[in-house]
Amino acid sequence: MACSSIRPPLTCETSSSCAWLASNRPESTIRTNRESTMNTALHRDLARILGEDGVASDTETLVRFGGDALGAYRAFRATSQLDSRAAAVAWPTDSGQVTGLLRYANSNRIPVVPYGAGTGVMGAAVSADGAIVLNLQRMNNILDVSAGDFTARTQPGVILEDAHAAMKSEGLRLGHDPWSRPIATVGGAISTDGVGYTAAAHGPMGDQVLGLEVVLADGETIRTRAVPKSSYGPSLERLFIGSEGTLGVITEATIKAFRRPESRVMRSFVFPEFEAGFEAIVAMQAEGVSPAVMDYGDEPAGGGAPEATLYVSFEGFAAHVETHVAQAESVCTRHDGRDGEPGEVEQYWRTRHSSAERYREEVLNSPDPAARRLRRSSYRMDYLHMALPISQVLEYRRRCALILEERDIGVREWSVWGRPEFFSMLIVDERGSDAPESRNMEQTIDAVLTLAQDMGGTMEYCHGIGLKLAHLTPAELGSGYKPARDIKAALDPNGILNPGKLLG
Image 1 (cartoon, rainbow, N blue to C red):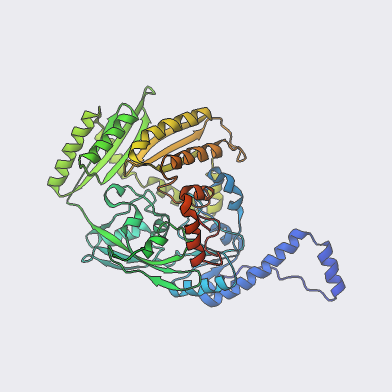
Image 2 (cartoon, rainbow, N blue to C red):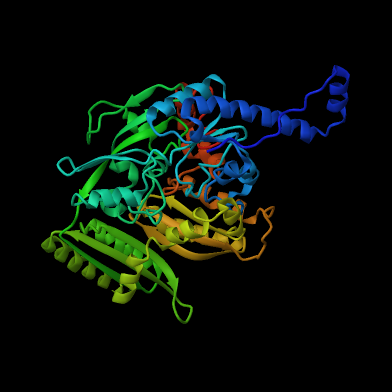
């Protein structure tokens, strides 16, 4: 992309006239010109590493790639950081260019913010002032799919849907199937250790990673062996899974590819209240019933009475599927569950990616994604994803209900996804305040997340920490916070990688 047209600094014939200009020019103008000069020099240096079409520093591009799907309505105390402005956007095409860029940035103490597709919801890809946005979208090659090894090797910018299509052509499939599959990248999914619809069968994205190539802050490249297990510990690739680009930049990943099942049967069961369905889920796990998909949430019935619906899918050989479906029916019946409508099951599965498809059309493909993100903001809603010991889930839900009622925060849904430990809620501020300065939601969210930590759980199992929850990281890690910070300091001593996120 062409360099932006930036007015050069004013030149003066005499030192006295320069002094007059400096003393009478508004400070904002002086600062803008200084930044323009610095950005021009940075653009020139990056172009030497990446080529002229591999860097941009115009305002439109900086704004476009300056954030992700975290809007002011959910950022709360981090809202001011959403206005941070990077100095340049860089598009490397291979790990060698990433190495060159990071060596340059580290030597000059320039922050670097890795950027996948900008679809994360916690602010992990929000820019930092003066930073280089390391946009990995051009590193989008699928390097190998091996039906014999049941693996795929990709660059980080590969869209999950494209990875799935490549595997499908070899009779395999991607095990990570989040709502964002049409728009999110392999690198982003690994960096947040995301969870998808088939997590009950295949686990989160991190469990599907076999090996990684990672470039560290100083430009050194490490490659871990792409095997299911080694007796050597600690596992180096686990350092970078879920680290949100704060410890290194993933430039290649070898991930598992799974056999396509002979048979798949989806069912739904409706329960009279949340507790009954949750107990059925726990009973299924205790009795060895193994769904590939498990999605459970309460929904208002026609008369306003609470009901909860469980969607389950069973996959594998036909005989295996038949046995598990029959056992699931038995368990759900014992817990007052009744069959759901087949049409609703079909619609649920067919539309599972519809939110991502709408986001792609309404935001990512719009002429001004940043403005579209802003227009989609609402200060009244948030969704939270905690993981707790199974024995604590119902008590946690009860105590959260009391906290939310006291603060006039309504619950639109309680849900469990993938595993009985994975508990979520969709909440709305009933006071109707749209003001970003209103702290009711912020304080309430901190209260329920802290409660999860106090009850032996974690504050987020699905989307990462990002800017939004970074302030709760010390409480999350407890006595492990200092060792985690020591690891960060060892791998990124100058603190250039994604500052302000996670441990940054």
